[in-house]
Length: 220
Ligand SMILES: Nc1ncnc2c1ncn2[C@@H]1O[C@H](COP(=O)(O)OP(=O)(O)OP(=O)(O)O)[C@@H](O)[C@H]1O
Ligand SMILES: [Mg+2]
Image (cartoon, rainbow, N blue to C red; front, side):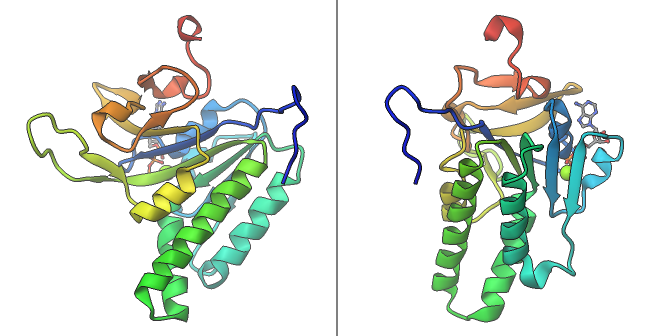
């Protein structure tokens, strides 16, 4: 628990959750942030970061899988306490979730209880990241439910267990879907489209990917 005295509430770093199809530029989003960065990668897609000089990459693979919850918790805690990092990225939580679920399922066969454990672990991870006060970026794969109805609303969602998604993203300020259109990378933040999306930071509903962390001047 932290108590902020009246008039002394210190804003936490913003938290961004961006989901999208393969190759839409999720991993590369970290390059847009200016500062010292740490990227925890779970899907092996860190080649996009090969040309960076300001980013520590911690790549988890199947050798880490059996102890993944403990390793992730320890890594995040360590990064939180290292002042040199301004930014923590989890890339991507679909892969992380599937590994964690496999571990939980391996330990117990009670399916319903297992999903509950999964949800609680992710809720706690979300809160741990929030407590870091650093800028946080988490990514996920997307599910395309296909267009149904005339307006196609509610077509896209993050590829995660629904309650796990809700628990994890509760402290996030921004949830958006990244996609490519006419050679541009765009991020949909509009809750009205019926997809997973929110923007607690400003009024923007559709942005260029490059403007995720730094709104264009006229929009500030
Ligand atoms: N803003 C950008 N401008 C130009 N090229 C970009 C941009 N963002 C990403 N790319 C390029 O697009 C390709 C895919 O990017 P990236 O690996 O970041 O996508 P991803 O969504 O993380 O993919 P995956 O789902 O496979 O992990 C890379 O070759 C990357 O260099
Ligand atoms: Mg990637």
